[in-house]
Amino acid sequence: MHVFLAATIFALTPSALASSHGAYAGATVSVSGVVERIHYGRGRHAYAAYDLCDASANCVRVVHFGAAVITPGEMQTATGMFRRTVFVGDAHVQNAIVIGPRR
Image 1: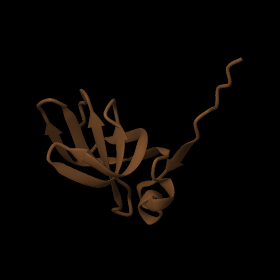
Image 2: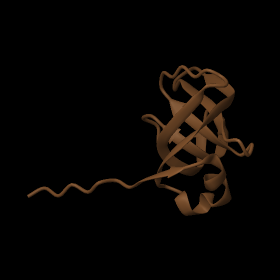
Image 3: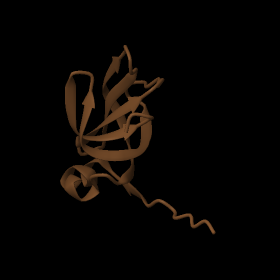
């Protein structure tokens, strides 16, 4: 017998996540916002890191491992695991949504 449990995905705004980020550590979240401040990394693990911001100017960082094409100013929805700290290259990023195989 197999039991499958549906994962809970929390749909949030960047403002809601920013105000209570501790409550969502390790959870799967889905956040929509406007893309700002994009950085692409290459090397052993390619990634795109960017902010999703809402009308209140609150932003959440997204780290997307693997191939990703992101355009500044576009509306984007990111669904992934919310991590308090994620290591990207030699740096660590705090309070980020992580998408892709390096969770």
